[in-house]
Amino acid sequence: MSAVSPATSRPLDRLRRNASDLVGLFVLPMVAAALPWSLGYRLLGRLARRSAVFRPEADAAWLVARRYLPAAEEHAWKRRYRLLRWVERADTYLTLSRSARWWQRRIDVEGQWPAPDGAILFLTFHWGAGHWVWKSLRAHGVPAYFLARRPVVGDLGVSRVALWYGSLRAWAFSRIGSLGPLYTGGSSARIRAALGAGENVVGMLDLPAGSAQRPLDVELFGRPARLPSRLAQIARSEAARVAVFSCGFDFATGRRRLRIEALPAQLDEASLLQRYADHLSACLLSAPECWMMWHEAPAIFRAEDADAADA
Image 1: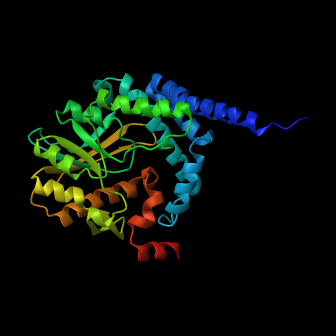
Image 2: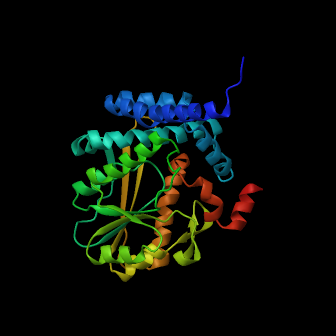
Image 3: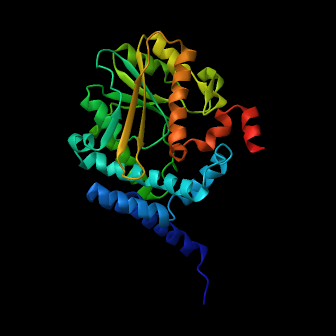
């Protein structure tokens, strides 16, 4: 039997990648979204147990997370991590195909969105699956821009099908209520302009903090950590209100959970950042496998604490 030549294998590899991405990014999530949600969620649960999709990501996240979660059970943790990622993909189609009323019936809400009366900085986390939150924000009269890293090739895959999916996600944001992205990297002026004009911005601070982002020390998940405070400083300088929210879901039923916390106007930047960290700590205690930033944990938690966790 003759070996497949490199020239032949390259087109075959591209075909396999495109076929795999077609199924994983389009076919299976669309099928789950088209079914009644109880059945669609059950399908996603089966995929999380049996599919090889997301296994490398789950394995990599677990290698770091286990340093901070000594009581966690590996098999269950990874399964829930993969289920979250499948739900996130299905939400691409659920948000486009299901009405705001359909979503309202499936979201358990703690707290209230601030009244649409002046600029609001909404702070959230790389925790849970919150693509649907734009519909909720729009329904309450507080549409918002979102602060995001500019996408690069490979974020969702390198196949042509993966690029199509990335284009679909970008197009969908405006259809489900977002005002669009404000890309990081020299974005302070644009954020100030948006808040100064009375518009709303959604951002996330659970990231490693560079010196330009004015890192401040907080207690996070019972450990010393350092988070960027630049957004908090901008909000205070522009007299914008600040609210923290998180988007989780019930692993048993697939119901969504929205927790909203409006922060007092008199908080200084350090106190505001600690309230943010307290909210994230509660999220990590309830479902640590829902945090998509475990790979950055050693850069977020202070070095001496990461060393202690490794011991």
